[in-house]
Length: 387
Ligand code: SAH
Image (cartoon, rainbow, N blue to C red):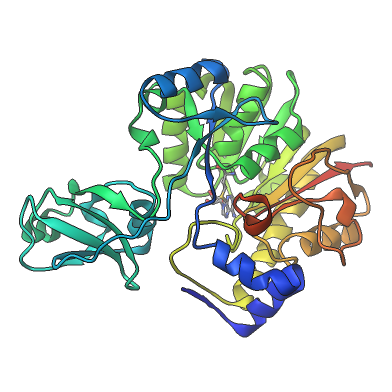
């Protein structure tokens, strides 16, 4: 259920034309491949694939990115509606939809009679049936304790193995990350000995990848303004063994040129907040065109500051997990207009497609669309600072 206002639908129609419905429908599906990035500082992708297969998890190497492996997503399956139900919030519903177990904090309400051991149906707040499992707590315990495993899920609409419970995950050998997100650090092309800045870094997906690509031999400085997200970034970096190779700072990255004016980076990644219209699977979402315009305005502020801490000849990569032209091509083109020193650099890959046709530099951008490329929706632009 996607509650997008008319102006937002028109903005999406500008990008997708006749394929708008195909795009909107594809958001309810997860795509056929679940990707993880291998922490190549610790292990080879081949060894991870062998280990997973040994324990019965089907896994494959990606055709283009060496560090990427994927696990096929199974489904969709029909899930029955039992007498007893547990209602969950959007976030928990989306994970059960993919086969994860359900923990008490995600539960909004439950049928009063639910006892430990009962078979229950897990339903999202908007009424979508997402899974079935065995209650590990009674309804009273769930609502009172508010923590712990509440439903062990054995049937769901889609199914991916519980990667976050795997040995590989615990040992910091892998990081779940979408394929388009992996292209961001690849397009950045970080080199050993360089100073690389990630301005909106938490929880550290791109930072970690940069560390692996440079084998810990670059100076990586990562900023974010959210304490909570920085905390989860620090524990992720620790799990991966990346802590010695990065400095993490809490800052408002719209003002890095003022607060950290001495930085002269070789490369900068700008992966700012966005309307996340490319993220899937989505059971429901509510957004307006005003959200898009606000996001675009915010995104421009990060670009302005990031360019000022970039040295002459340096590279800036901009990315979002959304699909509107307003937050992507138009942000970049408005920025190029006002900042005469930057120009787009074409991105070399056979994956994805180019920017939307009406964009001036459409040849230079990289787009991923769920219904065309079987990935999440994503946008990447690469700029160089000439003066
Ligand atoms: N690059 C990350 C994802 C970033 S999501 C990854 O690959 O894992 C966008 C991030 O921008 C969020 O973590 C959010 O906390 C941060 N953010 C939002 N506004 C900010 C600001 N004004 N200054 C710094 N970070 C900000």
